Amino acid sequence: MFLALREIRKEKLRSGLIVAMIVLISYLIFILTSLALGLARQNTDALNSWGTQTVTLNGSANVDMRQSLITKKQAGKLTGDEAYIGQASVVAKAQGHENTSAVFIGLQSNQFVAKKIKLTSGHRPQSDKQLVADTSFQDAGYKLGSKVRLSSDSGKFTIVGFTKNAKMNIAPVVYGRLGAWLDLKDLMPGPIASAVVSRKAGARSQQSSALKTYSRATFINKMPGYSAQNMTFELMIGFLMIISLIVIAVFLYILTMQKLPNYAVLRAQGIPSRVLVGATISQSLILVVAGLIIGTELTALTAVAMPAAVPMAFDVPQLAAVAAGLVLMGLIGSLIPVGAVLRVDPVSVIGG
Amino acid sequence: MPALALKNVNQVFGTGTARVQVLHDVNFAVEPGTLSLIVGPSGSGKSTFLSIAGGLLTPTSGSVWLDGVSYHDRTKKQRDQLRLQSIGFVLQAYHLLPYLNVDDQFKLVDHVKPKGNLDAKQLGELLDELGIADLRKKFPGELSGGQQQRVAIARALYPDPSVILADEPTAALDSARVEVVGALFQALAHARGKAVVVVTHDVRLEKFADQIFAIEDGVLHQVNK
Ligand SMILES: Nc1ncnc2c1ncn2[C@@H]1O[C@H](COP(=O)(O)OP(=O)(O)OP(=O)(O)O)[C@@H](O)[C@H]1O
Ligand SMILES: [Mg+2]
Image (cartoon, rainbow over all chains, first blue to last red; front, side):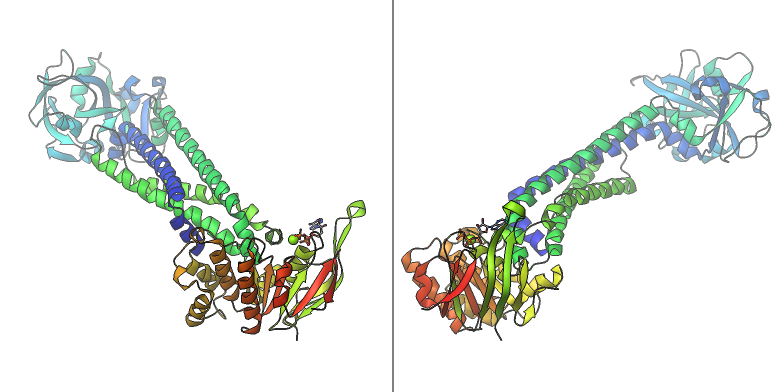
């Protein structure tokens, strides 16, 4: 520690450059991680807020709720842990507002999902023409009592409540009654909902073989673009980790190689290899941790400054895991020159 | 008891046709409080001798004794310990750590050898004596060659070793400075009671020595002053 700290203090420029590099890398990784999570949540937030364990869809819908239709006969009798969901893609139009693509979710008010939705203001729909909208509508200037059209011939709806984190398929959700969903879909008589969701895991009893029940994870992974997007981010973050490992390893290797003559002298004087290895490793850890601290501060500043419209979610445990990964990379990087430190030959200092 | 002794030391490098015997049956002993000079032409084996005497190199055969303790049969760790306690190296290129200021050069020793070093008062007196007391906050890069050498000497004396081994301490010095350095090493032996061994081919140092050894083609013998 002593040697590491003194060297960092003397070699301010060199250490500063390494720290700056780690700040940039960690900041980039933090932002990417938060963006990945934020975008993922735009798919899953609504579903998560319902507390759903399984989603039952029509087997021919390719695990896409938007394509699924279920009849009352197919669904069979619903238990108290189950609820109908009617999903429709809509475009919200209102005077003085830009058109907004949204997901309409029709609920039956006596079932668990409708009861689970937490409102930030207003009340639950009391008729088929009332809506509870995601707070992003509020950010866009909609108010309680605002009128909005969801399709050309379904008439006007009134927003009577707002709820937070209602996002599905990267679009804001408007909750209404299941009756309104039937209206919006303009269906032939027969279908009663798009899906049946359950807050209990496991298969449903007595349902038609035309339906299939999926776990929450399967349903989410099959959401359009969800897996591809996550994999892209995971790859980028993985590559950045490897880049940080290489940067740290190369820098430390060069620095340590330059110091080997000094280390040979210290070895001749009887200073144990352990002390020199310790100096190398602690130097790398100090630099990485310093870079991480600044990177974290920058990320926190970004989190505060970022407009709400940017889909970023800052999850402290997840970011801490990423930071731990970077520290690990620093540790591995500093192990590479350790072999050279251990092989230093003190005889080389005698000569001339 | 001699502070440092080599008994029947032979050193061979290489095997077969590449085999060279660099030291032939070297016997050597120095008492505390004396300055010994090892002189010899280039390639005669001086550096090899110093490496073995300092415990950096294990001889092909023979034994090395420091304060009556032999080097052989010791683990690498114990040898480190022995060097740290009993030997002060003054190396040719001074070899101070560039990122430690003068004070920290001593603190580093405290970190690995907390006991038996000079106390603050003794260190102050030593630095005064060497004329480097006001350089304590300076880094090696800010010192002249002569000042660096004095710091290296203070660094070597700081753990209070019984033996000082110096490698060509006057290699780059003009005559006036040779006189100063010669007197300094003599004082280390006579006033501080160290066994000082100086390897050199500088004949200008001979007048300061208590005993002089010549090494020629790996054979060491004492010469009369
Ligand atoms: N590791 C080694 N392997 C093979 N030969 C060596 C090795 N070290 C030294 N020698 C040989 O041993 C002989 C003595 O070398 P040494 O370095 O001890 O000489 P020296 O007296 O210090 O010379 P100089 O005054 O030039 O420094 C030389 O012939 C050298 O080539
Ligand atoms: Mg030599």
